[in-house]
Image (cartoon, rainbow, N blue to C red):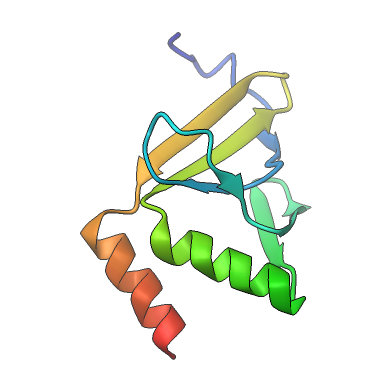
Length: 99
């Protein structure tokens, strides 16, 4: 389905979760935390600081190759951004976790 500007009017209203997965077809697992809307078009991901949750999140971000970001627009249209981390993404995450 092609989404025109009319379908997306009003901007993104909600991002319920961010999911990491091994392949494009897999359902994947969500990061443990909350996505909070800061203002129109801006969202903040707060990851859980609990030791078990932190370990799970690090494992997902380090070892899974695909990222899904579902979004709901104010006009009630929903989309799913699904993309591979790729070589650059893997370098970025590995660099962040080694610090």
